[in-house]
Length: 468
Image (cartoon, rainbow, N blue to C red; front, top):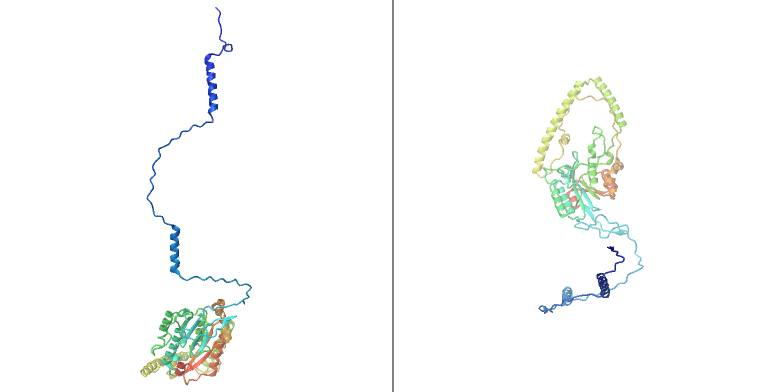
């Protein structure tokens, strides 16, 4: 038997294979032929019936806005507006004007003002002129210093009646100040030490309230014979006072107390000051303190004097025991004299009060000396031929006083672009009281040196009331 092996290369393809090939070719041909066609389906629904909404009234917005706008214009004004056209000026030459305004500009309110405008630099501005008892100064910051000591309360100077006129004059001036002004008041007494009573601690605006309380402040001053003086002492100097030698038999620093008032006035920073007083101390009487070498020189001279004096007293039989006995007896005599003076003042013032006369305002020490109430003590130390060393001091003088206050002037005035103040002075004297020409010269020179201040003397009640 012969075996045959299958050989795929020699085997003929079958019928199934041929059918498969034909079908594949047909599908590829169809795919190529219909690849550019898109098959879509449209779904159509039944047409619905549309129901329109209800009719709404139509409003024209532009027409409504127009009506509102017209109504507003009619309420505002029915007149037509005239338009004015002005051409711009060109090449106009105007002068350069520099105006320096003061810190405030005042107008008269019961006090005199400048009618013709006095101007700084190229233009002038009205400045208030303050007139107190005939002394005028242009200022917006003022200070009035009133002497409330006992000397003005004497009979010859008018007493209570004079003070009443002075108080009313000051109140009228304050009430007439414009509200732009600044002011302060000071009452003082230098008869026994120094007492200063300020209305306010510094200058205050001239408001209606401040004017009213200023009147309340000045009303009680020296209205009763039982209470004389400025009231409470409420001010302490801010700068050191003029240095002077200590109190001794050669010098009394109390003479300079009136210059404490001057310094307190400067410390207020006012532009114009009025001092109403009974007198002024010559600055040549205010002495400068010694240097250390001068003090030592005087100490040695005093030691020599005491040694020589003791030797002469012993030679004359005056012992230390006699000196001690004399000093004890002198102290007792003085105590008795003071007691008599106090009793005399009490009885004298009681009688004067019944008659409506001003009270005696001197101290017991003054009354004792005036009435010679102190008995002489005997035996007294015998006189000696040794001369006590003379204490000589250099006076300040007006120039020295101003030089000493340069620091005050600088810090209170110059550093604030202010000038030193004008200082005016009114001196009150009795109708028939003597007023030496030398004293008047001192007052006039001192006020003139303070920025051209002025002074005047009013003698008697009539002169004060009429300011003549």
